[in-house]
Length: 551
Ligand code: GLC
Image (tube, rainbow, N blue to C red; front, side, top):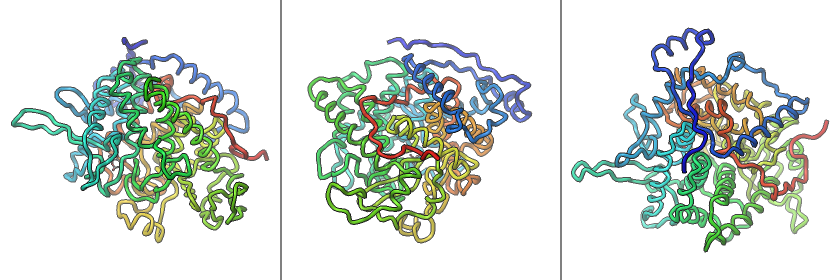
């Protein structure tokens, strides 16, 4: 199918509006000439104006008033490309990986400053997502299509850890292209966790694959890919791993530690928010693509039931705001029977001190984990952003998540967007929970480090909730450092001021995340690719205030 609405944009920067540094760089670089393409479905535009409508109306009221000042640079014409854009495109293209002449993905990092490559020379499924979105937004869908097809073939291969055979639906964490010089042939070699540090399971890979397939379909209008029997089968195989009946008493997905972007021991085992939000989003994306024939119909029914149960569970039990925190603080324990208020038997003494100070009167978030006698109160960026994008969060909850982000800007963003989680683990807690991991020391890496890649998710969440000014402020911070620091993987410190201890340079998803954020702000209709509107059939069942009490 012919992609609709292709338009060429001749981009240029007005010289008077560039500072000296920008000017020197711009003179060195070829002018950025990008062909941009609109999402094929015009619905995304109306979805978006609805978002902005909400912003214009509600959020200029005292309730939603932004506490941020609009930065000066953003007050300039924000649609003019920053010189960093051209640099980022060049770096992104340098990371492209080819298989038998076709582009199939991007390397995790192209860091020539270190010999310690580890597995950063591979195409990670989760890392490729922002690259894919950047390419789709730029009208280059080939690489995304090839990636989706190649990873689908890899799913079909036999996977083992020692003598244990993994589930059929598992998608690889990463893969690399090996060239056989004798036979002059390329081969794909995948890693499903069997060589990964800690042998961690890439639970998020399959979810990202489904989400990306929908993004590709939505962006190109090419239904022929998602409708192939191979793709239909791939979706069903991924979901069969999650929808099978077992011993579960909750609709959330039980996971081992290190099963997602946080792929080391960080105390996220159980029911981590990142996986639950991605699971919910993948279920909804699958629902929009599955054909109701044969076993497709059965799968659709299972998905629909699970979505209902999952949204109820998450919106009620994972949601934390001032009111809910106060309720938990006053919980009775050891309640038996259906009348229990404290259903999971959470001990009020387990509430950490920091959360009482952290929680604003206005705002809220989905906590990190909920299970029997277990509530992880940490705030996680990805889970909360994806909850907004997938509409797992109700509109009120989405607004409350953004309110909290504004109120706790110093803690969650500081000098570099965005903290992967807050707060960090230290001392005894760090020893017990991370197993003394020297890479995850306090305010570093997964333990409260700041990850530029999260900018794209933050920006998308801002646009969805009609609050792009928050994203612009984050983009300004990124533009003041990322290029100068050679696009690091992560930053360390309470404010995210220091380039991470072991951070790679030229980390591809830091580069692509920046491009996606910029393109989203420039043409917000792109949001349709990675956002799902509220499902009206899924009525919110919130018994308490969704965000803050009326004072
Ligand atoms: C690290 C990160 C992981 C990422 C990989 C490649 O292992 O923790 O999230 O996918 O590097 O960049």
